[in-house]
Image (cartoon, rainbow, N blue to C red; front, top):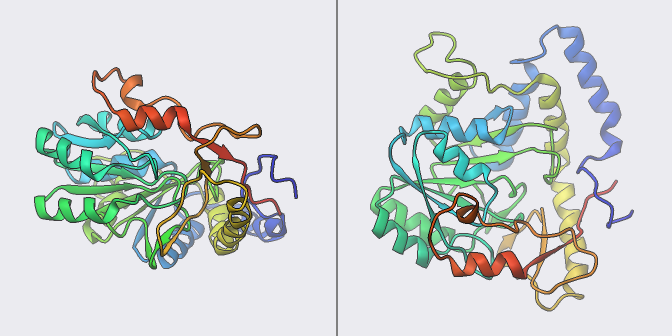
Length: 323
């Protein structure tokens, strides 16, 4: 094992199984909307405790969710310390984005600044982003506030595969959660995404939205489907996810002895360790999670002190699954 070398989180022992799945797809003559898409969704639902809908990308699930909740023309809060995919999903849904500061200790949305921005902008929805594989430390407070104020809570779970807090998975706090399976993620399907939600109506809407609104076109959708080949990879990866998370947590425990100034998880929280984050500059780093805040990229004239501090003062120690 060479932990310093980047590796997609795929176990080569699964290659024979994957090849057999791909053979079945080719023989079936159904390369999309078939058996493996359904199986991927079923396995993800079982692992994450919520009904699931597979997409060709994270953005597909995000756009479907924004459309379902009719957020066009409304204000949506978003952390600035995130990938541009999150605010771009907002603006490409016709909504207005306003940015919120993060905490220094977890890099995720600050409840204190969220309250300030919610009182100022009166949002219809908020995106909370779980950064680096762990769960946002303030998710309970943000969730309670949203319920009290009738604000839609959306969870960006792109980093959070395998994460839990006292047994609760990401996506369970909010009205919806969306995962990414891009190649850098803890598990990957090449390209792909997954929407999870407790709302049955959203799940049904999303299944139509990803496929042009078929069969009756009452939903004005797009082509956001995942291919059967990518879904088959997802089936294999979900079966391996517990082992991958266990492996990364064991490796993280060894790193904990080496780094004093590191991100420390609250009691009861398990990270999927998409990233191992430290607050000291190191020689062999994979860089930053994000080094340029979204509010600066989008030229919002606001001050977010913690976000600016985090961009300059965190680094990522290599932590990959190589088997």
